[in-house]
Amino acid sequence: METFNRIISEIDGFVWGVPLLILIIACGMVLSCRTGFVQLRKLGKALVYMVKDEENGSGEVSSFGALCTALSATVGTGNIVGVATAIAAGGAGALFWMEIAAFLGMSTKYAEGLLAIKYRTKAADGSILGGPFYYIENGLGKKFKWLAKLFALFGLLAGLLGIGTITQINGITSAANNFFDPDAVHTVRILGQNVTWTTIISGLLITICVALIIIGGIQRIANVSEIVVPVMIVLYVGSCLFIILGHITEIPAAIATVMESAFGLRPLAGGIAGSAVVMLSMKNGVSRGIFSNEAGLGSAPIAAAAAKTKEPVRQGLVTMTGTFIDTILVCTMTGLAIVMAGSYEKDLEGVQITTDAFCYGLPFPERISSFLLMLCLAVFAFTTILGWNYYSERCLSYLVGKSDPKITVIYRWIYVAAVFIGPYLTVEAVWNIADIFNGLMALPNVIALIGLSGVVSKETKDYLERLKSGKIK
Image (cartoon, rainbow, N blue to C red; front, side, top):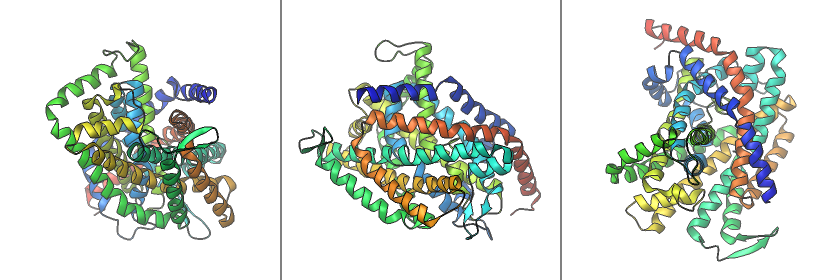
């Protein structure tokens, strides 16, 4: 297993090297400039559109339902465990680079939502088909269909073996273990390793619940997400706010720590300092930020394409709010809580880091604080599993050239099986595998976004002019 982890770690380092980091950041900068920094100018309107559906729009679900489906896939272990692992590996400065990636990522997410609506198509059965594969093929042209196929393949693997299943169920069972059996007293031997009964039971329960819901498809997933996601975000953000405001005098020192680490002024454990710290902080901040908000990954436009709307720009603005909520709000609060508590400097990993911060900051007994975090993580990760099932199914349909009910049912059971085995892999391997597929998935999508940035700019100008002249209510 150590050899496997080392190989996966080396591949992860190669995929998330300097070229990909530069490409993703450059994409966000290009789109920000070509849209006149729409993420700043129109954030207020985007938040209004988020909760106000468009009249007479065509699609399968409401804009809010599409957003919640996307949020259900993004607000998950990335916000709770991903932030913790990023700061633990890259220092407090990883939080700064996560914010930079999110700010630029808002324009990227805006472009993804816009292009998803502009280039979506309708299948023979009346269902809406859209996402990067369609704006690559229909926007860049048929000669780039190979790039669309590549995206679909990596998206399928990301959903099945990375961000969609294994990382989420692993996060849930880790949190359950941390609460019910932190000392691993009740174990059983499986495949040469000791596994707690908590892992087995919680993993089995989640697997059954996933199987019961994903059979219903996008509409059932959207219905569950519209109810669960907003409630849990409010509960989690409220808890983080309680921690931060309860230790408000520590905020300046925490921010100073983040900034010093981000620019190599504060060495990491082991004496790593200078440019090496900056590179490590940047790599972990950007990669975990993308894992969390999925800006540039190409997943959110698959859900956005199903929205009931006629205006690509309008849905782009709604889609953009996902990154604002996910990273600017939720991840920032998680990161600040962890830095203020100093939890990332302790001999902890994964969810244990965030749990330590909650126990430090909340005025409750440790058992209650741990339970609250476990509940938030379980629900967030569960809805992420649901959202990514829809994404990966769309990738599969594009790869095989049609939406075949028999193939879909078989794939859903394979997806359920991946959820089932997820708890039995190591935390390090799980996150490295997810990072690899995220990077490979982002590459063709980011290339397409840069290539179609002119279309995004033109659509944006046209919509805002019509809005200003009163042609749009």
